[in-house]
Image (cartoon, rainbow, N blue to C red):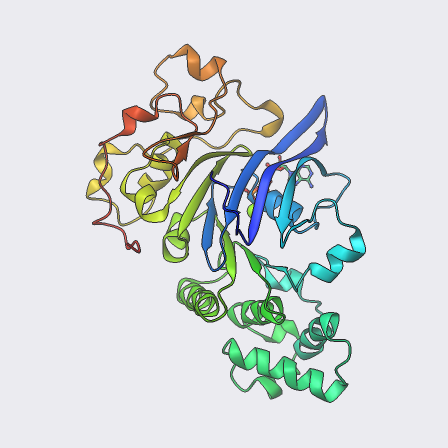
Length: 345
Ligand SMILES: Nc1ncnc2c1ncn2[C@@H]1O[C@H](COP(=O)(O)OP(=O)(O)O)[C@@H](O)[C@H]1O
Ligand SMILES: [Mg+2]
């Protein structure tokens, strides 16, 4: 993708591997993308495509070992998070980059009241505050994310809160110190549908107000459509397509993206020319040669090139769109989906 000089977050050629019997597994393979200030970039792909490993590597939270970042840069505010020391990284985490995880139950400590944990997050970057001021700051932060009667309720333990309220608390902690970049990894996947919508609305509101750059990671293109300005599609550790959200929905340029779109509910009218994807992503220890998607690809049709050559990302329809399919041109004009999905234009 293009390099924006003023990017809030710039991920360049990030690669991560894990040891595996008979060799290493490349879980993230040369991933590059930028997120502008106040922009939301969605990262989508089926389970196991490397989304979470990317996020953890960006924040220096990847357990190493077993993981190993084998290359790349993660630039935030002129610094490379991959090369600064652990102490500096702790100082930046929460202040420059923050993360919201899928399951707030595992991110919150079960043995302490929610309020104590928000107060700890306050103190992480404002150690000068006394206990009364820190508690007031924590309650205010919970108020702002819509926790009703926060000063009283926050004395309860995480298990006494609903999933949606816990996620609100996690978001409150993540944005306490106005980070430049917020990474939300499947922020609503553990929640039921109504609560999902509320949490997404909360994230959008925070973004509008504070102009935070957001990376929203989801296996669900519906969530991406609600949140993102731009989309990065990952498959087997690599970016296979990136585009503006409205353009991607109107006209996918990679058969994997077309398959993800075809699997979305509510697309029944225009769906006939899209082929839902069969099968599942490869085990990375036995990644197919050439294009990793070829065993599932409707465009492959016996072509050798798909098996022999790894397709590089290349521009299509102008500089902002890239695809990694040898035969992307064959998707052109086959789908018009914008009437059926609720996509920001
Ligand atoms: N702790 C680990 N040990 C070994 N391999 C791992 C580990 N975590 C992730 N992986 C590998 O990285 C791949 C990508 O995982 P992940 O980023 O969690 O996928 P996603 O978030 O897209 O569902 C997995 O398919 C697996 O091969
Ligand atoms: Mg994940």
